Image (cartoon, rainbow, N blue to C red; front, side, top):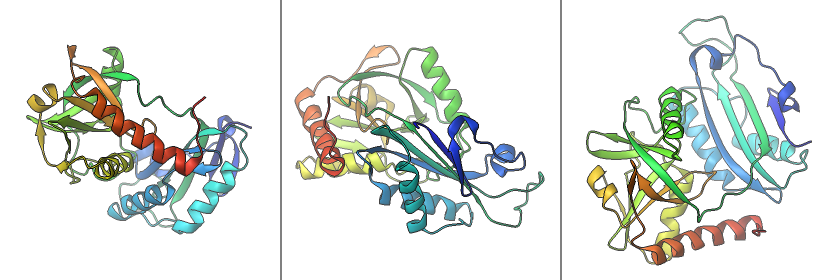
Length: 282
């Protein structure tokens, strides 16, 4: 079996799983989620992802139906049922089940899990970006399943032949549709502060820690569109892409001015990942 679904204790082939029509996720996107990858039976950075998941639920006042350790046990039990060696692991909790009503329903939250094949990315490939005004709400730090603005931005990026859309509020760059974004300038790694305008990405944290281990200064501060366009290098990071660098933004060449430093950082990110999971690139 290569793709599994789980819903409140029941599991089976992903394409055969169903959920109740009255699940709050369908009416309101009323839930939170997290995701990461697994290699060789190891779910990467699981403690950090589970901690963020529980924090997102707390911020939305969703009472989860399991503890942190119980969730980790369920995820590993599911993982053991699959044959593939490289997998994408996704889980979410919705507020519960009840006839459509904006006020919170009584009862427990619902736990969903999806595990499917997910090849480990080539961190060294170049990507293209577009920029878009950030019109999302002011709780971007919560990993909620309300993702319509990100869905639209991702579609615009796809139509432009690009990998990602970089959000900005006026001149300040925030993050991407489904990644964090960072720049390298004058030997420094610069990333937006982990405030309510961005998601505190786990891959973002690992990138910053990699830089610190290498002695590269890390600055958490606002940076502008002008700084993005004039950066020595531009990186995006997520659990499924680690730390990709951009060669183009809005159709104009970008980055490419500090390739040795960039590769040094990417090598360190992959070294850590390989050390934890035993991953070896074919």
